[in-house]
Image (spheres, each protein chain N blue to C red):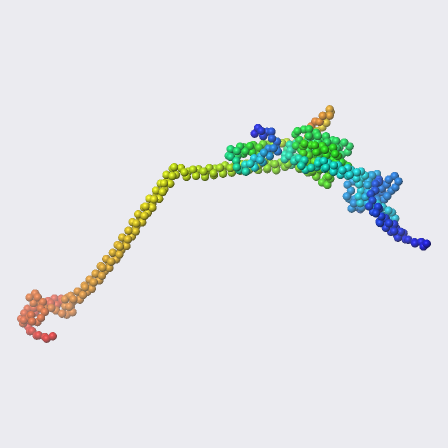
Length: 79
Length: 424
């Protein structure tokens, strides 16, 4: 699971797809299958968690007094 | 010389024909400033084009005026395409316009085509260079005006599809002086960060001048140089700009851009969950298959176990024994049935003999009965006894002998009185 923390969502999904394909191809040892299965479940949990964790956030980039660009919350009026 | 006298109509008609057969007047492009502009309730437009020294009356009929991308007004410099002919009733020649463009449009269009060709040759539009959009962007950078419908549409559509989306707006000038520069800055700014997954650049619909910033070479090159995938969403469905061609993806509208950038939350969820299901299924199948195989191997192994060999031999033995018993038993039953058969035959013969004897006996009895002396006596005969012997002839008797006459139901003592011989 540790190495997966470095994966972004796309990489995780891609790896998950790979694992599913590999498992479906079916000429793996039981040990390999179990290992892949475990990794796959961890990846899908991770993807699900990433989706659930995401929060809406709308920011705007503004020029500070010294010309530096600062990101602040964008108070956007919704209808 | 005879002077021909024309009627006004004839003359006007003659003049009109001269106009109509003239190649230049039939297809003419005129540059001028609009004055006396009038939009009639019928939809036709009437105006005058003028420059410093001359004027010409113009008309733009409804069929053409409805296609204009701008509203003409007095003082506007335009280029008119059409033909010049005579309006007979007023005796006026007029320019009948087919198309009207604000002046400068033509040069812009030319510049657009030129730049497009140049960048195309350089390979800026090449498909191989185009980056794929991420499946699940965490942060979307938007380069557009901080006011107006574009950013609102993008935020609305994005959050509707996936409430967890993060949007960062880089406020840019999207038209007028310096617009291209701010768009470039925006693209560069997002590229300087490492957390932006996709960039949307865009603005709402407008005239070619209003959209022009997106046709600038610096914008095109900034898009091309961007490491982050860019969606270009400029104007309406029908508007095409250089940035649309360079961008990795062209969206017809800003809302469409948001739809392309942001995945639908439920679809993603569904995808992940179906993968998870497949994982379980695969593993289950694998285990089931392995178990099955293990079972068959076990079976094969058991076939060769000593125990099995003993059992098999025992069974063979049992079989042999069964066969043996069976044969013996069969022989026994055959003999038994033979004995039975003989027995019945014998019995049959025996009973026949008895029956025969019995019937012979009854015949004899009958015969004996018929011969019984008693029976004869009953018929009225009697026999004579003398000195305890039966007298069978008259010669055995003498007169005066005592004899006993035997009847069937008793005897009488008699004395012989007379002898009469009968010759039979």
